[in-house]
Image (tube, rainbow, N blue to C red):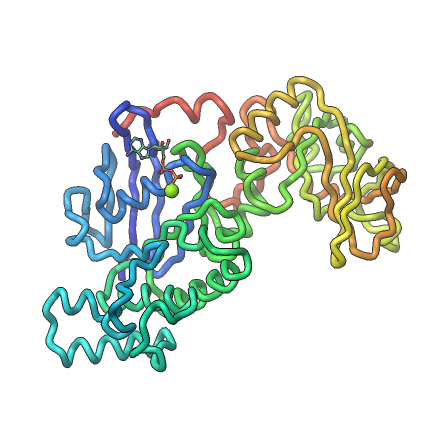
Length: 407
Ligand SMILES: Nc1ncnc2c1ncn2[C@@H]1O[C@H](COP(=O)(O)OP(=O)(O)O)[C@@H](O)[C@H]1O
Ligand SMILES: [Mg+2]
C-alpha cells in the first residue's frame, strides 16, 4: 500500500485548455479519497494521470515517496477497477482472479494460495468454479476487486463504477465497496459525479470545478462548512437554498421575512450590503409541528406546491431575487448542471406536517445554520475555517477559470 500525493498537477490537452489546473491532493496510505464534480471537471483526467494512462503537463505525481511522472502504468503497481468489470466470460471466477498471476507466470502453488486468500476476504469461496455470467453485479464487482487484490496493488482506482446501474443495485454496490475497502484498508481513489456516493464512501472528498480543486475535506466538513457557493450547491440533496439577504444588526432580511442570526455570523456580514444567504431545506420546519418555541425564527409564507413522501414533506415557496443575485445564481445553476435555484425556496418539513398547497403557513428556520456568501466571489463569509478542511477555490466565475501559471 502507499500514499498518493498529487502536487500542483496540470493537464493541458492539445488545444492548451487546462483540463486539470494546479490541483494538489494528498491521499494518505489506506485512505478512501473521492474526486467529485460535474461532468467535464477533470476527474477522469486526474485519475488517468495517477495510473499513468495520460501524460502530466506539469507538477509532481508521488506514489509512496517516489515520483512516478515518467513511469509506465505497469511500473506504478496500481489497480484500475473498471466500470464494466472487464471479466473474461469463458474463464471461471478462480481463473479470472488468477489472471494477473498467470500473466506473471507465477507457480501454481502461489496462484492457489493468493486466489484462495482473496476469495475468502471477498466471500467468493463457493463461486470459484462458476462463470461471471452467472453472478450478480455485486459478485462480479468482487471478482474484479479480487483480481486487483492478488496483484497486491498499492492502490485501487475507480472511475464511476456504479453509474450504469439502477438505483437499487447502486445502493447495494456502494455498501459493498465501502465494506471491502474498510476490510482491506487499501488506498483508494474513487471518481464520481454523484454527491451521495461522495458523502457515503469518502474518508475525504475533493470537489472539483472546471479543473480547479475547490475544497478538500471530510463529508461532514463539506456539508457543514462549504467554502464557496459551488461546493454549497453541489453537496446536499435537495440542494441548499440561495436567497438574497441584507444583514442589519443581527437580523438577516430575506424575501420572506427576517431571521435572527448568531452575533458572530452577523458581524461577518457587517457593511457588506447585498449578500447571498444559503439555507439547507432540512433547516426549516413547520412551526406548528416544531412544538415548544425553539431558538430560531419563524416567518409566514404561501406554499405553492407540497410533496408528501411519508417520512418528510417538501414544500415549495416561490420568491424573487434582485438582478445582481439572480445573475450569480443562474451562473451557479450552469456550473452545477443543475435545477433552478433562483426562483423558489425548497423546505423539508416533518412528515406529520398538515401544510397544504396555497396555504399561508408558519415556517420555522434555524438561523444558526445560515451561510452568507459574497455575491461577487462566491466565498462563504461565515465558514468555520477550523472545520472546513482545505478551501482552495474561491472565485465563482473569474479568477478560478483563468489558466493558472503552470509549474
Ligand atoms: N483526449 C482529450 N483531448 C482533449 N480534451 C479532452 C480529452 N479528454 C478530456 N478532455 C477535456 O478535458 C476536460 C475534462 O475531462 P474529463 O477528465 O473526462 O472530465 P470528467 O471525468 O470530470 O467528466 C473536459 O473539458 C474534456 O472535454
Ligand atoms: Mg469521467
